[in-house]
Length: 363
Length: 129
Image 1 (cartoon, rainbow over the protein chains, first blue to last red):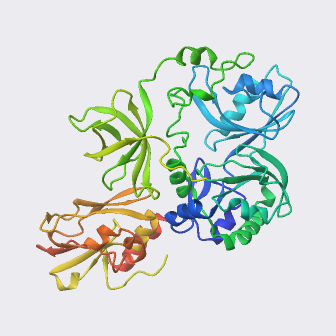
Image 2 (image 1 turned 90 degrees about the vertical axis):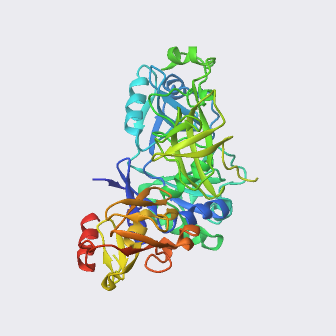
Image 3 (image 1 turned 135 degrees about the vertical axis):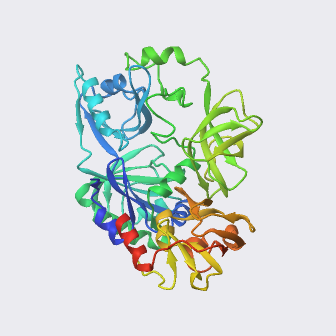
C-alpha cells in the first residue's frame, strides 16, 4: 500500500495518473507529459516532491558529524547555502546522493531520495555517535513543492517578500510564501531555474492552490514524475537506482569531485575511495543520442555495431523533446566512442556519443 | 473509464478491431484505455504491407515516454494497408485512438478468432484498474 502525500486529493481533483514510486503514491502525469515537460522548459511547472526525505542535523558539532558521515565538506558550508553531496558505505559504494542545506550555524537539512531516506537517517544517526549533534528524520512532517522553469521567479515574487533576486543557485532562506512559512531554496532537478519550497504538510494543499492561481497568467502547469524524469535526463542529472547505486563509487559515476579528501577528520568511505581518485574507471557515464526513433531504455546493452560486443549498459533513456530524438545515459567502456549501438529488444540501433548534458538552458 | 465504441470488437491486449462483421478486411487500432495507460505515444512500429500474420503474433510496437508495448495480431491474414499518418505523427494514438490513430488493415484468412465484445472488454479493463 503506497503512502499518499499531503497533496493526494489535489492530484486526484486534477485528474492525475497516480503511480507507486518508492512506496509513495505520486502523480505520474496530469495530462500529457510532453506538455508538462514543455511548460517547464518554456514557462513553469509545479511539482509535488513530498516523497523526498528531510533529515535535520543540529547541534554544535552538526557540521563535523556530517563531515564524518558524508563525502563532502559540510562544516565549511556557509549558512544559507546548499551543496550536492553523497553518503557512501565503508567500501565506497554510493548509498544515496543528497542535497545538504546549512540553515544556521548549528542546523543542517539533509534531503535524501524517497527510496533511501530511512537508510540515510539510520546511517546518519549511527555515524553521528560521539559528536555533539542530533539527527532527526522529519520527513513525515514536511511537504516539498517545487516551482521550476524560466518564469518561476516571476510567479513566486507575487507571493513572497523574500529576496528571490538575491537568492543564488544552491542557496536557501527562510521566508513566507502566500503567508505560509517555508524554506525557500533555489535548487531543482530539471535543468531550469527554479525553487523548492519546504513547508509543513498541513500547508501543502493551500500553498499549491495559491501558486496555481499566481502561475496561471505565466503558463504554469502541474507536472508529474514522468516529466521530471525526462527533464533531469536532458539535464544530464543522475538518478539514484539508475546512474547511481551501492555497487558504484562516486568516481565510477564521474562525480569524484564531490569527494573532499582535504576536509578535516576521517569520513566513512575514505579508505576505500582514496586509492581510486587517480585511477581511470573502466567505464564512463556517457551521453547517447539515437539516430532512429526507438528508445534505448534502462538495462539495455550498449554494443559495437561491427560485431555486437557488449561495451556498456544504458542507465536511463527517453524520447527527448528538446533534441527531437531518443537520448540515453549509459556506462560505456572508456576505450570506445564510435560505432556504437544499443540493443533494443534484439535489434542493434545506432547511437552517437555526445557530451553531457544533452540540454543546457540559455541564461 | 469513458465509454467505448459499441460497434467494435476488442482483444485482451487492448486492441480494437473494426469491420469484423463483413468478414473480409478489418481495421486495427489500440483502445483509448491503452493509450491513456501508455501516456504520450512517441513511436509506432507497424508490420509491412503484404506481411502475413498469425493471430497472437507480436507484429509491432507502441512506444511512449515511459514504456514500450507489443502490438499483437488480433486475427490471421495479410496486412493490406498501414497508417503512415500515425507513423509520422504517433500522437494520433492518444488524440484519436478510434479514428485517425488507426494502425493497420488486415485481409482475414480463415475463420477469425473469437474476439471480445465491448462488455467483455470493459470487464478486462476494470480488472486491471
